[in-house]
View 1 (cartoon, rainbow, N blue to C red):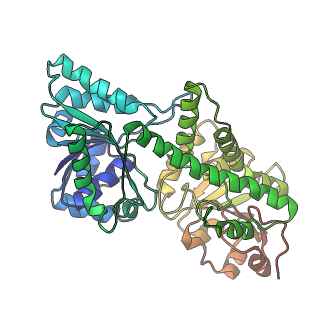
View 2: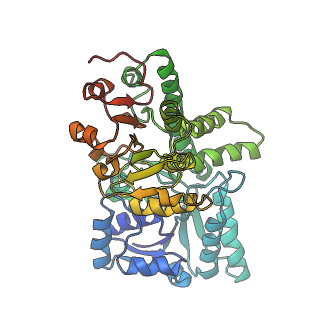
View 3: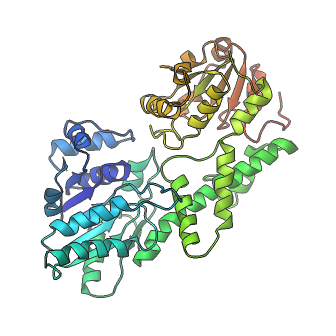
Length: 460
């Protein structure tokens, strides 16, 4: 099947590679000519487990190609997937300019009936706007009789596991309006596209278009809520002598609750949860409602990004001049190089603002982190000069007054604690992801500060 993917970002590239792997002829469009040139040269702009292999195999087989020519991309695909960004606007609403531009371009160049599949995360009613944009272009060309169907097919990909999520999805949401022949044909076509990912049981969930758009936001809002809920309980646990990890196990064993997204930490980040929570709140505001729970979720998350700094200041004071802090983990989560709204950025900004020096390490995100930190510290004279990006965890820890763990990379778990203690200037650890057992760390002679586990009694 000939498929066009509009957008070569995180969602677009993963979708394209996975569909090409199933034998489809996939052409990716991006209006950034430099990005297309890099992709054509074999440079993958993001890190995602398994993506490199899919990219190489399918570009070599000529099933995955890239272009910056809009007319070529529209003429290629009988199905057009819109997978462009929807960043937050000033009021928190999703900025739909790239989605509407993509839709207009489809209408400007299409000459035959086609399916237009909205893969981008968009607020309720966007499908209608896409249809209007396409229709307006067809009308200008006197081609009103050329049919098309707009479909919502939101993605549910976890960064760090996006390829496996696409290949083995929990569910495949497809929103299609209508009960006529065109709607039935659209459903049949989408079922055919996803057949290779839907073999051992039916994961397809068909619904109306608006419900599909809403489902994406509802899913991310629920997960963000669980994170903020657990973080708020963790802060209380520190005050009342409770081990939040024991609480997590206790409530997670309830099948109505489960264990996922109940880990206390330094708050959520990335490209999805922050903007999607804000966008859903703005949708409510636009419709005269106030989503109080989601407002609290966002407030808790913003304050949680300060939790490590508060612990550091309580231990070392507010003036950190002359102090050096090792940072382990920069990406907002493991197995990705995504630095968007990563808690590490706020931690480092606060440390530098208090006069400290920073030595940081991340297995994957170091290059992207340095780029983002340079932007963050652009207005702070000499700020970025006090940041050192290191090539190993121990290099970052060497001579540091304390270690700060911000991202839970698996490689951090297997450290030699004796070597780490000797490498640090003082054996102090601020663990923002609760990687280690407090009693074990005390036994190794560390002063160990964690999230929601600081004041419980631990066996020595």
